[in-house]
Length: 416
Image (cartoon, rainbow, N blue to C red; front, side, top):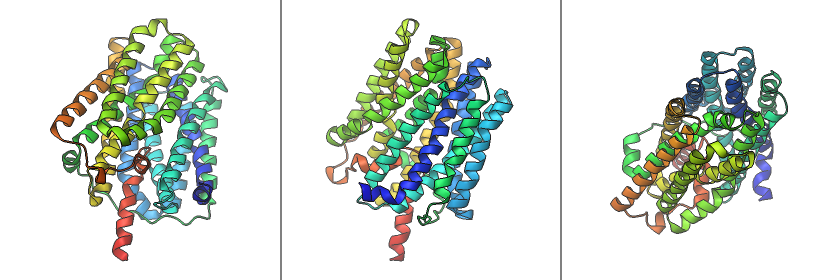
């Protein structure tokens, strides 16, 4: 493991700093928006705008990298991503914040393309699982740490925006000074959703549903906690507990999906998500600081790993030539869900109360479980020979750049 991580140590250090700033922003902005009395729908629109920008970044980031190269794109996106938090602190307008969140989403999607392409280039088939599992664990850990940094200062002041900006800027230094060779420049990947649905309808709908539920959480969880207790510390602890739950269950659920079948675990996890969401909705009025965090931990443990399991299921049925298209298509499905989820959930919350967020996620998980159960009646599981180990699919779970990995390998094989 030491030898596998040594070539990418500087990159992982940079990622840890960069994503700490990202985690701080993710919690700070909804908290500050609530303090400024932004409407719940406005906050939902801001969350949707982030994922709209993220989806655009996933679709167009490859072209940008292809034109000017990985290092220049990374430095440009870091500069722009660093400026956004400061501008948030200067202009307290829902319209301005929605635009800035879209810009941030685009920046971080392109940054993920560069980061993960670098990791792919620096790893081998033998150690890629170790490299990417370490990357995902670091990412989840520092995101949680960044969320806790909202406790350092009053969120109504400018300090936390400045800290987020500084962290994003500092994250560029290890990458810019890295002596590792730059990865090969990817070509544009064509998304074919029709073919994706033919290969794995369950995975496509699974990623859409995960985007609907998880995008809602990332955008509106601080609004939910503010209705329980206006103390910003609860929002930080709640989101951190949820991320920790997802990190702890990632591998156990993946292991079970290897042994028992992806769709069975998708149904089981989605069903648990229904139950936990129902408990949260019915007990919200009596929730304490501790019980809210326990609920977040449990919800994250079943909701956050769903995307990875769905990706692994799609790859079980894929031909080698389909890996690129599947990765890009599933990410697009997730992005579409993450755009729509915060907007719909915020509307539900406006009609009902803050617990409407988890009523919405419960309905999403119910639809997912029902659809996957229906698909089990229509098609058998993939044969063991085609079964992709969960660790091999983990590289696609976090963000964007695995879209390009197989294409690069294909180009190398053609040259040989």
